[in-house]
Length: 282
Image (cartoon, rainbow, N blue to C red; front, side, top):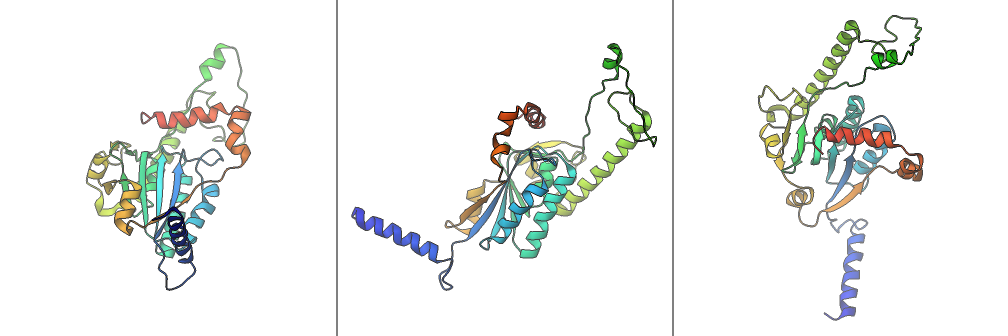
């Protein structure tokens, strides 16, 4: 084929592809909406949260009649409430529009990250993906001995005896610890309910399944936490054919949000984010 003929041929193919969307009798190539869920889950502009992800998820399900929605997940977890809100939004739209959802785990889908993965109908992992950590954690510091050493007096006045509970500048109170452990147990039960409702009979009976344990790759599949080892494009081509098209969606951040950490010196946020991944050796 001569260069000019090749150009005309390529231009014609592109024209036909674009026209498929508007001409009823021309069948469009199947499109899968891909939503990227990367980072810690937190109610802030720094991580994944429902207020910022909501419009992204809504567009992914609504635009162009996708045959499926794929979730690219790389998250060590975070806020259980934000995890629940994001997952619930995905499930509501999937059921309303009758669109299947696939999750593809990259480095890690642990704790809240796995909560998000369970919003999918099927979960795929890499051989090296870290999956699980179905548990709840609360961590902090105790600085009462430090301030006492330097002669600093802590002055707190409250109306309500539980108002200053878990104050890091006071010694731990057994009553406060008991309350905290009760809250964590309730959140853990909520997490377990979500996983069992979504994964059902696929879960294997295991004493470690809901203890916060993690599994890697095929072992996560063996536990029923995932459905197979596979990557996004090969799996989608296998399901929807070689002509499947991907339309990607992600959080849109303002110029300040994208470069704010460098300008403002928000090192603490970076440290917290890295610490969350470091728990899984990443």
